[in-house]
Amino acid sequence: MVECEICGKKASKKAEIEGAILNVCESCVKFGKEIVTPNVLIRKPNIKPSKIEEIIIRDDLNILVKKHREKLGLTQQQFAEKIFEKVGVIKRIEEGWIPPIEIVRKLEREMKMKLTEN
Image (cartoon, rainbow, N blue to C red; front, side, top):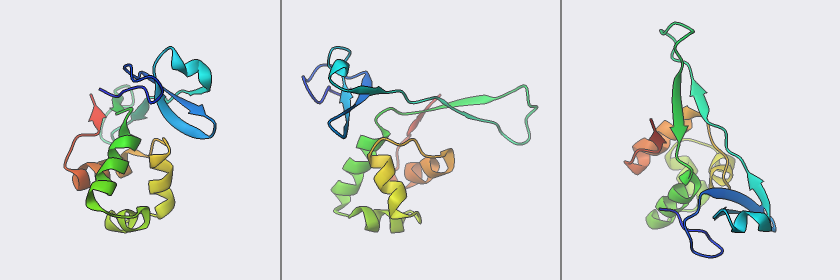
């Protein structure tokens, strides 16, 4: 369960408040601008176009990546090199950007945990 970074209740939204991206509850979202994250749709190449698989990436991806990186004692640059990505990708993920599924899969392998829900 992700806690609201303002009041401690269960967070269900993300908001930009004074330049920071925070996990917030329904009550505290009013203190900033709500960030809406779209569901990511992936089409598998050998499947008929009418069959699209929906992959939902966890809302707390940015927090999980940052905690994992810090647990390893790595800088964003070092972590990016470890998964063969640019440091800007790691910075953007930790700020709340939802990366393409290929990068999510790299993170899943590195972190040894599931980061998608379906």
